[in-house]
Image (cartoon, rainbow, N blue to C red; front, side):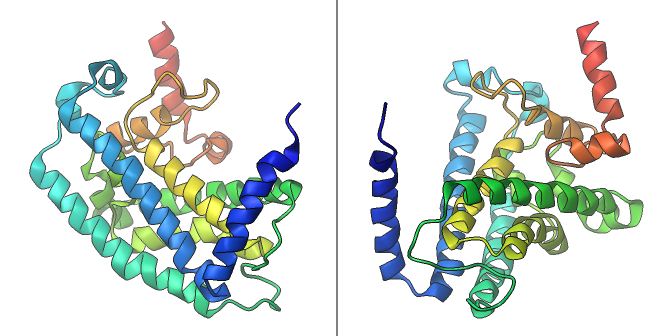
Length: 269
């Protein structure tokens, strides 16, 4: 059996080196943002290459929507790049710096910085809590953005991609980026006063998950019990038929996933 120290020790050594390299304020702000951006662009560009080249074909065949609906135009991609770059420079960056500015080790809430690694049990428990906040806050923000007055002025931008792609995960109006992306992601870590390393992990997992949910592919390695990305792809294809949440829990409670469930039944028949 593998000794747990053989896994933990490299993580500890790497973390201690990172800890010595940055100030606490930078660890709370710049480092999580940097990891988030790197993850977002790597995942997004890899999927974009597949979208454009349709190669390798053995992967492109897992595209959920038909090729004619999923076809990308160069002007769409350019429009997406400009929107995402604006959000990352003028929304994500200031919000990240704000997290560092308000960092206080003695406050009740926030992100805690320590040279010691967090306990594994704490990390797992906090990730579950983060998912809870993400599911609830994202659902209600997303549901509100689909009300006619907010949809036409704000959320319609995001739905310009009826066949979503990974890079379009944060392609949105600035108000939506704050309400639907940033607030649901940072609330859990702040409330739990989580360890900064857990916060960094959550930033990477969160943005990778969001990108994959928008990627438009259900690859064979997708875990069978996960209804994403099909769940959100359906939402983009039929924007007024529910599927507002992440995990499907809030949709199940409010019945906003009923059209989705009916479509699955019809496919089985």
